[in-house]
Image (cartoon, rainbow, N blue to C red; front, side, top):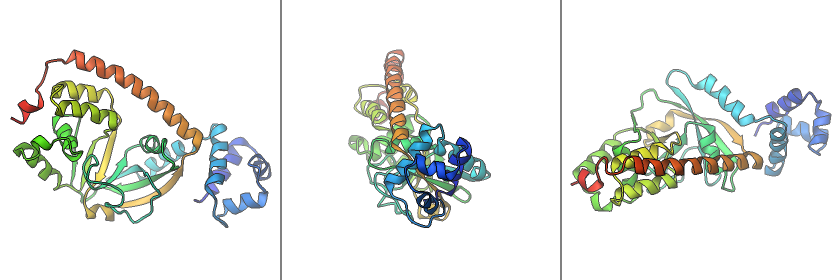
Length: 284
């Protein structure tokens, strides 16, 4: 990683020279200059040292970079997206290596629309890099799902929970339609959201109950690259290091959102009880 900007920004924001900064970081000035001018590689532990120091002093690089990159690249048909990986990632993008059949929409490359989505994903993993990309949508066929019955059925199918209905005409037509698009844009579904979808598929709640319960736990949208064509339209902009304290902040936010969402889900189930259709009525 190139730390030229980070070291310069820390010095200027905190109004200290680089000798003082090297002392704060407990390294020599020569080492700091090697990092700054990319003369030598930097270890994960030293990245943690720099980013933690900045974070402790109110400099949240990743949020700043997200804003700047979206201003620079988020124009015309371009969109800035983020990817958090379970294991170290390297270009070029490999669909099979970076996904599995039981992901939300099967094999593909999955990206979130915000840094926070990707950071939340890796916050409980032994990974500390979020990858920022620019995707040019020009010439690509996109399909956007909303929180509705169609989306719930698609998620349930790809996650292997719709076996009783997988050959139903409505399901087959939906899956065939999805296969015709280069990019799928859809609400992000975490495990707790999938548990709610599983209740719908299991006939425990109606589609309307499920939709309102899922809307209450909104996590934003994900972009799924499904075709080889998309790989010509995407470029890696930046690797964003997430220090331990920033990851801890993400975990705290997730806990708060989970608790608030759980209350909203309970209310939605009561409010919309017996409204809408059960799965067997939709796929009869």
